[in-house]
Image 1 (cartoon, protein in one colour):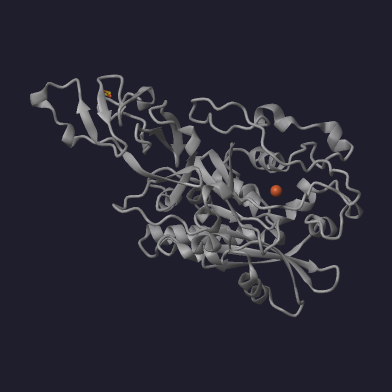
Image 2 (cartoon, rainbow, N blue to C red):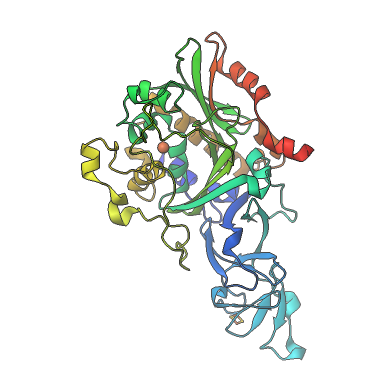
Length: 437
Ligand code: FES
Ligand SMILES: [Fe+2]
């Protein structure tokens, strides 16, 4: 990558190639539970813009520039009262759409409130999450048609976690399949795992072969190896425009989930995980029924603060070296000395620094998915910037429904994409079932 490629991919502020491209799409921004009617406004940073979010008396969500359009005092200090946020400096009041509805400090005959608007963005709620549209269309585009996002709130588990690095390196950690057998499972021996254990492929074949292609929703890879009883074992995963991934750790038929890597600014991002709640095999147990070490799940949070970067911070972070345990590393309790799978990913991607120096890298054939994805994002975002192409899936959100990830076994003579299409026909579609009910 050239310096210019690197900058175009990682800069997300207004006027940048990637920033303008991402502004076309709805962005997951806050948990609905973070905003209470007439409660304190919340500092929210998205795509490098400092915003304020609040819920009014009637429950509507407002998201706007944190600066009051009068003299730029922060609306974070504002009084959230009677269906509007009132600036504490001179008492001007704004509704969730940014309309100035009271200009208390100006004499009635000089009032010009109909001419003043706070810079507000459209917001909507789905799956217990507040989504924000920062683009310029008068009518916002449809919400993404990704299947898990169409399920009722009670059927989806949602996680958010701050990651202190650029959005791209966070996302790339999720489509970098060759790390699994090291970072997460380097300490696990093949004989520890039952024949159907989902880690088995990565532990038996720590140097996977893979193919990667462009798809209507973004890019896909298929990592393959011979299956135990004959056939080919495929693990397939996706990048979906503009910042989503689907990972291969689950049975293809039921692996209904999506992960979003949403830029906060150039140096920080919020990870969002949306998973269809269903009974799942316990993957942290070995063949002998004893728990596997070094593969714990779950998220441990510091209390949220009101800081721009104060929401959904994890207890392990760069300031404490992600709580790395050197003894655990030396004794193969885990490969890393970090016991939690998510924290292992978090540690390596944060350890690269806020933005990876792409000129320092030496990419390998196993990085083909990363290479293809970078190229596809760059070309697509640049085409959009030059008025040459529409953002993929934006106005045809059902395209996302063709993307599914997970593992399956196929006849070795069948091509990956044919096997993918055949498996797609048989997969479980909870959202469609829900819509039909
Ligand atoms: S700065 Fe907000 S009302 Fe004056
Ligand atoms: Fe990982």
